[in-house]
Length: 146
Image (cartoon, rainbow, N blue to C red; front, side):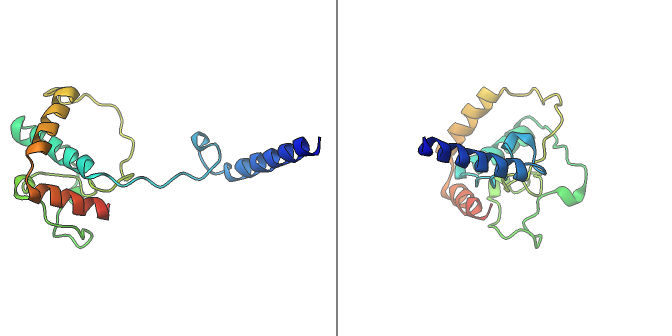
């Protein structure tokens, strides 16, 4: 009896708190504040770098960056990480490519069509196995920042 009423009261309080919090949040969070994004792992960062390397150097795909201010530059004061490894030195990257949760949902657009995701993933995995200490150290240091 009284235990059941207590449970129902607790449920009602939690429900009302969620409803109150949810007034300004989107419905997918069920009224609760959204969680902060997780840090990228070393491999996540490597995958992003290697993907750009393969697309830009092997398949000659030009990145779609509209403004020069949006290009990643290790010399900018807003970047406090290590310098890019020589292999990736001349890649064109978005300025916030290494920061999780900073990506806005993009509209669907036709992909480059140069390589399938499965083939890309296999190629990146092979390169990860061959990657030198400089590349792995860079990714390790950068994942602590992002």
